[in-house]
Length: 212
Image (tube, rainbow, N blue to C red; front, side, top):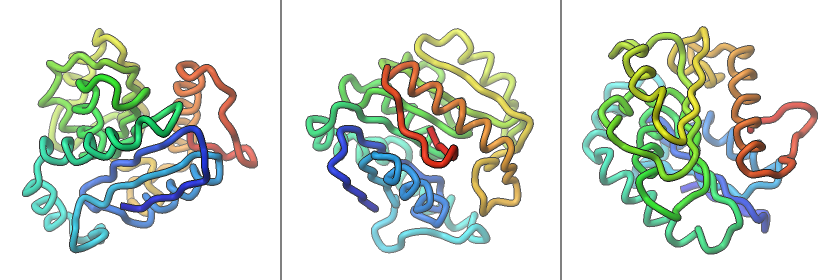
């Protein structure tokens, strides 16, 4: 895990893609830490921090050897320890991390809000009714399934806010070939508004560039 503590009253727990604790995740950690959050980011893997983008197949196989349920319990264990230390706890997941975050919504008391970027495997768990407010952000298409079907399934789910953008999976990652800075900025604004509306606090911004 990558941990940045500032003595803040709010904690952000970041759950990465299959690649683990790569530069994109480290960038997000630092940007949130600069905006008065304590931050914890998982790496998923004990013997390596991350896989390169070109190692997608290996990274996928490695994550799936862990599985969503085990990964969820690993995160839940950390949240049980950290929850009493903070006034607000937010979980933010990317891709498989977003699906793990979604599975955490069944647990009561572990966190206050959940944000998920392009969690495609959530389609396997649409029977879940979240216990906390959730924001899910998607591009207009996914290579492995019909995104419209998932969005329709979730559209009336209690506590869920859905956002969709003219972009592809990975649109918020500056190191991805699908990165779209304008869309990433719009998504960041939507995350910011979501957290502001639910937390009821004036969250910090830095030089007009905010991630929440």
